[in-house]
Picture 1 (cartoon, rainbow, N blue to C red):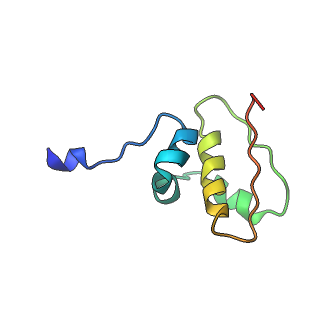
Picture 2: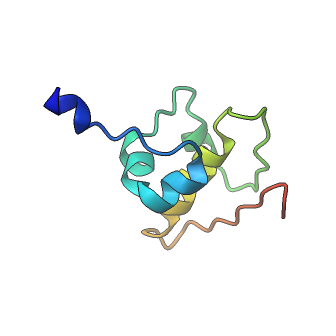
Length: 82
């Protein structure tokens, strides 16, 4: 039972995940469809759209966290309330 208590389940949304558990986004993000590589390997600008809960914010949060350690990666995230 002690091992189960050590599992980090993270937050309910990517914005809080980025604030409280950035390591989960950086190290535990599953990109099964390869979207991250497609976004990062292109020189174009992108608008990421999709239904609620599809991972848009998680993808943006992961890239934003990655940009903190890279001089060649710039991120500007917008939400609907913006």
